Length: 441
Image (cartoon, rainbow, N blue to C red; front, side, top):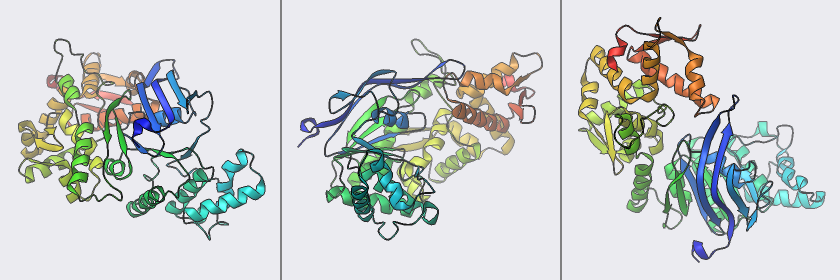
């Protein structure tokens, strides 16, 4: 049975979500998203930070209402929490004063299920998820993996139409996460899990390819569906097969597609809007991490596959994304078909002495990184070449929430200090332009 002929459980039509900042400004998070979750499929929402994955999940669960568009459960528009959905969270979200069994029974209790039936169904779910023997244990007595099993049992005990999972394995160590993923697939394939569909939010490319029948790749700021891919691979899936690796490379190529951002960062042109700190945010990468990636590329002859680099370093491929984004944004590297190649300027930066590399980085960051450029330009425009942090935070909050605005400014401080473009005094929260920095613009 194809997806198109299966019964639709949850549908979103033209969903847009905009939050309002404390000072009354609009903060767009999702824009014009339409999707369907049908019976018999696992769908992954994949995207970087700022893509609105978790916000979309909460809209589909009826926990928050979209600003525009509709979400429907089996054809009925939602006006409250989705009655056919149960959720598993990254943070476990267990009540520490309740036992395993009591935590699992909570969702049944909220639905008015009688005590005897609650106990029977909770024990069955606990057994299904491999926690039998721990019914009377408290969360503090359990490992992270066991606590997440309680989260799964609590969701499955209500036998929902759809199981929603928000980064459910990201707080676990690698081996525990892999074990839980394998068990989840086993329950799904064996039709033991009392659910008709699964929707998982993740930033992990391999996790999405391992689990999902379909992958929806979201772009960022605001979140839109950039691509939809069908995963036509039998389960259990082997990471080492050419088909698996090819699909990971395809998704990786979509996520690292920075052509528009790079073109915008290189300067205005006819019909192209000028890049701003909002439209082209700084990747969460340190200068040292960026330099390390470029050194690896030089050592590999200047070019290699992103998956191959990650594998040799024992990282997930998506762990490299911020470093790759930073290298591409600054013009030190370019990507194509899930491969990365160092540019002439990137090679020059890598092999230069420390003083020259600082000068090269300063010039490149001031021209290609919009927030760094904005800081230098603002400081240049003042009489005393100083400015308070809050000026930049207020501007950034037009496009980011408070935490992301601060993260963006922290990255800009790191990059600007390395390039000796400006200094930042954390005590009086002031930026100061370094002598001669305006020449880098």
